[in-house]
Image 1: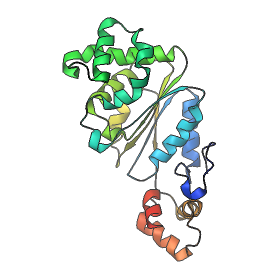
Image 2: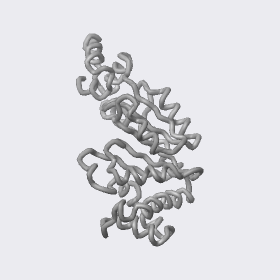
Image 3: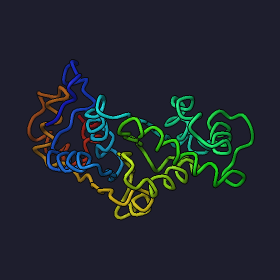
Image 4: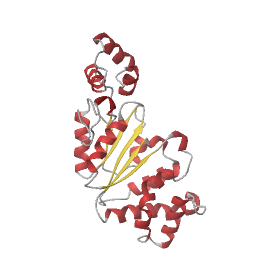
Length: 243
């Protein structure tokens, strides 16, 4: 069990509580400690976002953390995820970019002008790569992206272009994507070459019981817990809904 250090709420309120993931969390932390990137994948409700937040919490002081979390309803908006990642640091990096790259990036992030991948493709791609390199010049950078399956197409293309070309630049990616089977391959190909793919599998009955207990459902009979585990298939989100 891993709990964010800054949590003071009761167990029932702890949305970042990690149950039954010790080995994979350790593997992901070791990968990040070595300077590599991590791609968490698995079906809906399996706990990817919870593990993602727990891992990202370790980097609050040791690295610059850039975050985006996509949603299905906003996936049609071009450059939205890119704006989440770089919008707050645009002024910091704009002066370090060549004019053409700066103009293209500012247009994409602020909506001023008609910036598109078709019109400004190379300039935008290079601008994102240059911006990440400029940030990394001042210290390590961790890009945290949840729900990659809902990333708008433009942002996904730009982030993938930069990720494949970062080389030894101290920029790491910590991402999560909803998948069934081997669907994560497409996202892995758009990640840095040293990315570790980590699949989250269903929890055991004992782990589901521990999760329910830590979320305040302490009076459930064993037969009920057994039925919750069977019905949920070991999916923690579904199990909590049933609880």
